[in-house]
Length: 307
Image (tube, rainbow, N blue to C red; front, side, top):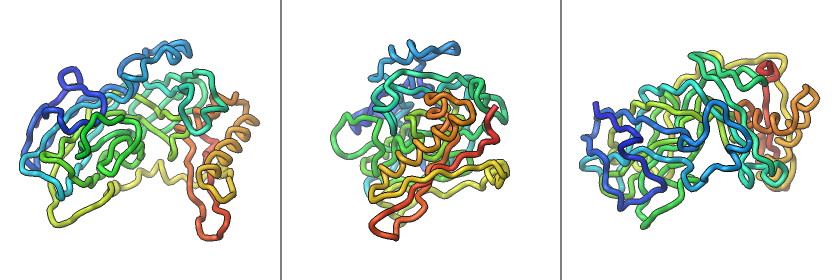
């Protein structure tokens, strides 16, 4: 098995002209040792001042790229996450100018978490199940770069999909020779939507098995889902669902999130903490998109996670 450490091959942005750090044969397994999304700029005692001082140009560092021999445009890469081991310290930050409600939360804010085997101790606010996944994993686009890591693309990237976790297989369309796979932005947990812009951000080692599937084209990322752990099937009495109703799904997501922040305020959380907690434990859901002219977005939250 090949091991590739971020200290040896760390890069910022997608660029098909980057030489591969390693070339492997289809069917091989590779281990990538990943930095956190802040590039190691925050420590265990991180403060809002540290968030304000972040060099955002160094955010979302990637480890790679990994070339897969004999793979080229038109092929489909199948990446199975065999194992994902995350670090013991994690950060969730509100970064000025970033996030679903950025203009309403202009001040930097940070919550440091301790990550155990089964539980994330989210500051003094909540206890969440550990559910590691890769926030960013993708291939080099054919269009000459460099390209920012922040927006996701048809070849993957910063999708922040909490189901890209151990046991799942991610299918990606290949645009360049060798595919040029890179990954980063590991999370110990996140809610669907990642509304404040960050999750339970940490370091990780990811073991990936990479195969090629010819004759099975995909135009956008697809995911063969892993079985759900029992802890994710809670149907407890303390779940709440706020809604946003209107003709714009983005506006509906904002309204549903605002309503959940207000609801959590009734449980003693200040707005910044509530916003961050929605990002790691709240789940945005499209509830319906058929009853024109208005659609419904929901934010689901289990109050039992509160400390």
